[in-house]
Image (cartoon, rainbow, N blue to C red):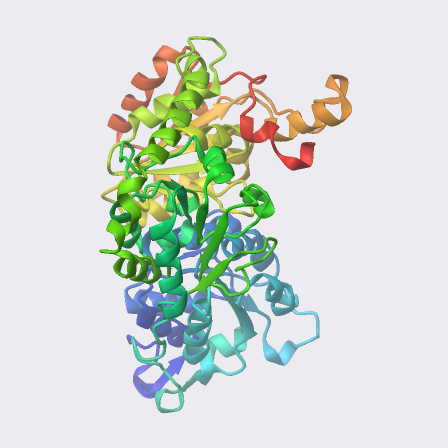
Length: 564
């Protein structure tokens, strides 16, 4: 029967089927999972509700895929794992979603209530472990509450800045059946309120006034611009008021490459010389030098979904809490028509920044065009950037090699850049590919891996083959964990630079072939472009194994404060 009941008990429904109904009400179309005896009734419910069950080889992959699915779709992702080691394996994925402000629900199994504290199979205090890295963590106490608690968990995902929730469901709660009349099953669209706050109107007016009168404004468009789907509002603001824009995280791609307001290489110069700096959806964390990289003389404005983030680590002149898209739209409306929004007087400032961009580009141009072998990482990421199309979703999974790519690779559309986020988690690449290709099968997915990063979750390349999810994968292979190696060399000298950071010379192209995908090796930089095109044309999951210079380090690696 569709509700998991028998002909003799047509008014009964199991906990697993209640969970599936709640997932359906939230709009969940797929769950990522690794099977376990504690959770299989959820699978049975998902089959009846038409929710796809995608099985992976490691629970970390399931959690990362749920995170990635949320980023791509704007809807919460869901992973389902068994108790004990199943749940602990997923901790890294949940923690990454927590720091990246990604809404997802992890459901973990648990031993039966009747065996509480008796040492049942895989029994652990999951809720205690998950509470610090989620917005909500709880046990489902009764079968009739299963759907209600799932909906509650999703609701908490959107309290303030988005984030993950966790539910554990004891086996007897999940498998038991209760009368449908006793179960609370929240209806779709009727248990969550809108969280789109447009900000304080007085603060909006103040920001508009600041921007109208600014001579050298700059704006950083962070991940929350994409999270709130505020792309059009951000574009309208920078074009109407003639403001140079920098982008980071999921905010990359807000403006297309070549747009007159798209800047990338002159950010430090701009932040040192601007008179008004607007930071949108980005905390003053290590990526921002904890706010110290902004001119002490600038008027600094911070816009964020989370009140706790605004003004943290650095004093600000104005803070606005709310939805980035709505706030930026309101600011544009408030500023329009006033002194031409200040737009006419900024040509000299934009030209100054463009000159700084050109100087930075010319400095690295020899490396971008280098014919050296082993291949310079700048040449590799330059070839990847040239390879991307309007529909290419770019995923970066690695340390030093992805730091190189962050300076060169420019997604051509909003929502087409994915990286781990501020937790710096290696291993997100394959699960993000899985989520991106399932959520947007019409999009090409291009993923760059460090060889160390790929090793963490690479076995789920087979999952991509099994589900026929083609993508173009590139491994920047230097047989090293180079971001750490650089720091060791700086701290302890060259004679101790290779302690605990050197990997074997692995032929990842052959690994891809072994698992049923397309693989190719590249040692000559002239072969990078043709190899990428062959991978695209193969119609298979692919890995192009590119041997890069192990002695070339990204400027971002060399500038990290932990190595100073």
